[in-house]
Length: 564
RNA sequence: UGCCCCGUAGUGUAAUUGGCAACACGUCUGACUCUGGAUCAGAAGACUUCAGGUUCGACCCCUGACGGGGCAGCCA
Image (cartoon, rainbow, N blue to C red; front, top):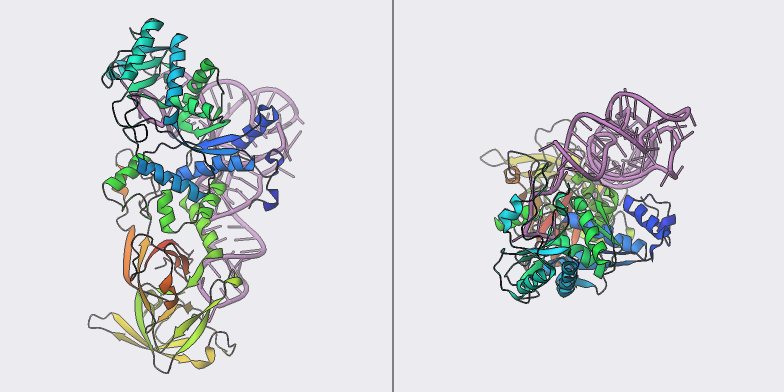
């Protein structure tokens, strides 16, 4: 664990081991590249919901700003009206806030910089560094060259500055059809780096923008716009993922040609998590084709999905800390994430008993009713205790009884004894079955000398099981989630598409579960540990005034076998 | 085939910048336990992709090979 005393006034002198980005920043600070300033940003395109990979980026970028006492911007990279929507903007703001990324009042939009970008483009045209090209998409592709051959220069490449200025202005005015013209940077059609082969800066798109409406019909491409956005905002370190590494020379080229503030782009490896997919395109497909119930389906690796599943922002931040940051691509084991949430919830979640698949038990020698005392959280005594009603008719977990137990099974068996959590030790005297031979009820006797907390028990039993008083039980629906895919890397197969690896059992709904009565007034989103099962939270979507629905966040670690 | 990036226990990251490869997760023991959880104690697991070179000394620097990833959208 990181040393809490090390909350650095000066991260450069921190003893905590740092990732390579911190090393770069330390060096920049030492050389006074931008004085003592550190300013990062998270620049999502509002074309989908944020996923856990974005969360890693947010934690990284915000974490840097926090550690160096710098600033962190949330900026929407909304340069493509065809894919972007206000719904996504809203969800992204909510998710970044929830994760704790503090952008203060800086919710920024690339589209607010369009006019400035346009002027800079004019400047490049005047310098003879950009030109209007009449080639269409196919022609541009076919003249770009390939891996071994250089591209061919466009016949329109050497238009006069005046003609370019005129044409570019008319592009803006809407005189031309989509795709009929582009503005290109004049760099080098023979560059071994494709990005430098006269990249496109503007394309014509007659489409309504979610914020600019119909103000523009030409839109800047990512390559042209991104560095300008960072520059305008005074970003010092423009942190992005590996696939933009080849774009850095172009990023640098534009900024140098313009002679404006020049952030340092730094690339790191995006997160890949086992048993899920992380591309927005694929997640969109899961949503659109109804393989899941929306972006916030608890099986989705989206921030909203994890939130609904019961993950805490702390656990996700801690996960980001645990996995670190590096440049080599990796496939992170989902076990690391599960560790992070268990670690958090173990310390903070209220305990309760819940019987997922009830089996009736009658305690033949018990008369009356009493309240027993349960500990709310053994990790945190300050959370106190609660009353648990006990009667002669209870329900236990079907899986806690076996007629022919394998070796090592220490729960209830015919003639055997177990402790009922917080109650008594009971002995199974009789097994009652239905016509099909299924066990439908157990008859037990209890030992009055063994009540929890009395210290009067001389007996020792190997197992303790949970239970619910039949009379007081509250019914609930419990949703058990399993991994969405059956293989570690669903999108790695060259023949099969990722959908072929969908886990048909990723959701199991139990509608006869019984829970402790005190849970009746649980708030939506409330998190609990159902003892011996795992962590659960009250679903925010399906819970109604008269029906509680719980999502299983994660199971408890289980060294016996599969829980539930 | 051209260019760029990357190769460290099963997984993810470290290694004071050239000095006996460390941490977390996971796995396996054992202790404890009224959650088969947690906690505690311990163990196994790495010729640092390979081959050369520089050096007293290389995970680190150099060369080459091999392996992985990225790039030929008017997506980001």
